[in-house]
Length: 618
Image (cartoon, rainbow, N blue to C red):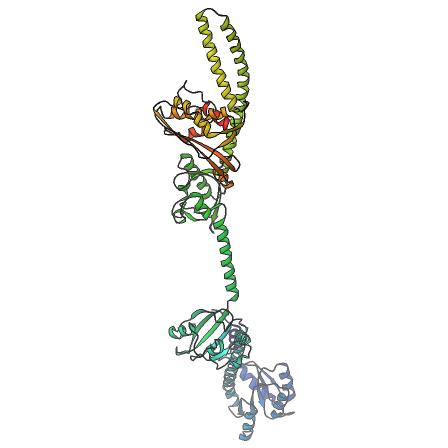
């Protein structure tokens, strides 16, 4: 329990007990009697000194005034009355007992009026009676001083309480049960622009709320009803500032409710701070939710997703409510490598380590995969234990696609350069072989030899076609670029396509009603269509449907960006060749344009058909 300064002061002043004593000063001109009195009082345990004249008494009292004076009424140099008059002139208050040789009631009354504590006649038993008289006087003085100390302490406590009451910056007031103001502090009076005493007796709702009845919702009512402290926020335009009002009951010693203490605190700054915190949180929430990268908060204990932003929802394709019901492990790719990577990352986080720019494949809703870059930081509690993680997930699918496209382009360019160089030199060798073989064929007469040479020429001619395909793929063949009509080319190839496809394959074409003219090499476009048709035939095992469609399309910039086309926006002729065959898997589709890649049996394909298509279109 705390002790106030006033209480400490009161305690220090109330140390007077029934054993209270002062030093005694005996003023008696009879030296023998003086010695006798002192000796007897010393035996009783009193501290006693003695003097024989009034002048000596005044000198002793100047040095030590806090004594009990045993004063003979008549001395050789002064009377007792003169000594008391001198002390009064000095404003020195000294308690005294009058000793006289003659009992005189008039003198006794006069001395008592001057402040004598007692009046004693020097009789036969005078010395024996004196100790008890002194003890009684000490008891009276002790009680008086105790009361004086209590009064002083109470006055000081009241002053301290008043100073504290007025130093409180809150609006503090004491009300009676009829809501009249009994006391108000300086802060409230200053706010109202009046002196505190001008408010006493006024009803609070009239003064503060400008109402003829109590303010609705005032905590005063709850305090009266429950006899307990009640708090309420008050926003009254008449007051002008938001207040937090607390009403506390006041009880008398019998437990009867006698009043209410009303404390109103200006909460303008708190409201402004709370509003700013709310705005700051809202700004953070907007930044968090609308950030272009995905954010996650993950519980370390089990990997549960505690929080995620809009980009995370968009990236993985889940509804937010669903996302918050799954665990982060559910987002890693369903492969041994993906699950192992997830466990490794999570183990590192649980150990308190961060993860930076970790690239891995994660799984969207529906099972499709997405390449991401992970940066994760652990969140520790006060004991240093990892309780959560903050994750930043960046979609790097486009970067990975561009890297793969760049690698493919570089690979195809390298293969094309190699194939072009080989085809050029090989074609020169074939020209020599074909030339000399043709010359030999004209000079031979033996039919068997001519047959052998014919086989050589046939193989050489096939090799020549192979080199032409390689040159086409490497785009080193000389092209004849002229305006050509796409629909006319397809129509002109129909008979040849029928022969290629066979009688069990149905063909249909849906050609654009609009004339589609492009600048291209006619022969090369025909080669593209024939190669695609041949591949469709093989994919359908000789039975099915081949469809060729054409149309004009206008590619906008957003179309090019969305579909990742490596072309510029503008108008294009679109040729679609489709069949009812078995199709191809993702691995085959990735390698479909690689030179010499084929899914056909050995001896049934060179692997250059689609590579030539790629080279021509590029």
